[in-house]
Picture 1 (cartoon, chains in turn yellow, green):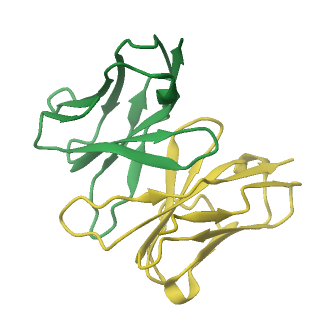
Picture 2 (cartoon, chains in turn cyan, green; picture 1 turned 120 degrees about the vertical axis):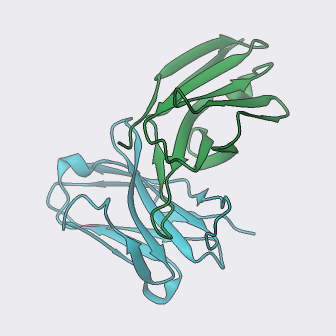
Length: 116
Length: 113
């Protein structure tokens, strides 16, 4: 079974440009999460999809970030326009439907975004 | 509060035990996790502990939880060079059906030969 995949693995763009990150979750996983790690600091939650719906987007830093999950399969995270402070590693994770018990989030390898 | 704190670096000799510590602030945490990140790879779940447990052992890994002090530790016995990685502790505090993870900054473990 394929794991969570992310594309691209690395993106270098100039300030003011637009970048779109893609995440393909594990097939059948309803839950999809985006996280970000900036400058070696903690990994911070950005948002959570349940199927195609945004369950929680409280971690999105500002309106320059737009996440979509049309059809409830893969997800994209667009940054427009990119700023220097957006540099970091963007992780995607997926999991099966959460219940009261533990459910594991499976992480992709991340996309390293560098904004110059 | 939602802060999770870890020391940034730890170096040990191959064959020794490693102990990575973590403190958290949210007493309503349900599950606490240890993730491992090797270079160029995603985060791999190593182990987790439910908040009503004090200890969990899984082969070379031992997790200790002190709820009173909000302190979590991961002990790796007989540390090997392949254990060199960044180790993140994380907690969940369910809000409705959302179960996002709150991570620490990660501890870079270096195993010296």
